[in-house]
Each structure stands twice: as structure tokens, then as C-alpha cells.
Length: 180
Image (cartoon, rainbow, N blue to C red; front, side, top):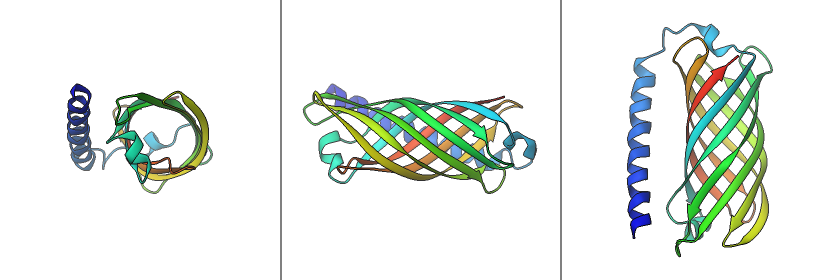
């Protein structure tokens, strides 16, 4: 019962943070210099909240949390390649701990300063109730970068992740991007 209360609180906090960041993104950075979005490399460290979908939601409960690290490298003026890994965790209905370690490669394209679309593909190394598996999948999403300085941005994104064996989820990500 305590874990369900923690999950409900975390969902409310995540939703509130997402709303505040969206408001901030619309009121800030419209006049930011375009040079902030043209960088050679970046490291993005993020907190993620994921919401299982389909038959996976029956096993995974209502939501799960984790952290990821993303390395980005320039492939053009507004185009970047990405490599993402991290650790995601959730409790099932029996409160058994489960986890996933994603290893994804992808690309993102800035449509306008700030807004971008992204696609990724790769593996999730799963541990569910003591059973290990490797699931291949892909994701499609969008995001917005809010410049906080010359080398620092807030990266807010959302994506749909499809994996084999009905392991699919909707994901929101809040990251700090260090550009170099």
C-alpha cells in the first residue's frame, strides 16, 4: 500500500513538473540565439517516468521511474545522432521489483529553435520477477530544449516506446543537457 501511495505521489509531482516546464518553455527562449541549438556534442542526464501500455500495463502496474544518460553528436546544422542508456525500475502488482536497461541509438532533428522530433531503436535488457530477457524495439517522439546558458539546456521530451512481447510504454523525460 505504501508503494502505491509513493507511485501516486510521484505521478502527481511528474505531471506538475511537466506542466510547469511547458509553461516556462512557451514564455521563455523565443528570442534565444539559434546558436544554442547548433552544438558538436552533448551529454544529457535525465529523470524519466514511463507509463506501461497494452498487456504490459497489467504486469507492470501504473508507472515506473528511472534515470538515463544520452550522448548526442552533431550530424548537421540541426540534426544530431543519439546513444541512450540508463536504468528503469517498476513494481508489479505483487510489488516485485522489475527493471530494464535500455541501450538505444537514434537521431533527432530540430524543426525550429527548441522543438525537435526523434526516433530511436535498440534493446531493453529486462529483469522481471527473476526472469531475464532482451527485447528489441523502437520509439518515436518529440521534445523541446530550453536554453539555460551557453552550454546548458533543459531537455523536455515525450515518446512512445514499442518493444517486442507487448513491452510498450509512453515515456516522459526531463534532462539537463551539457553541450561541448
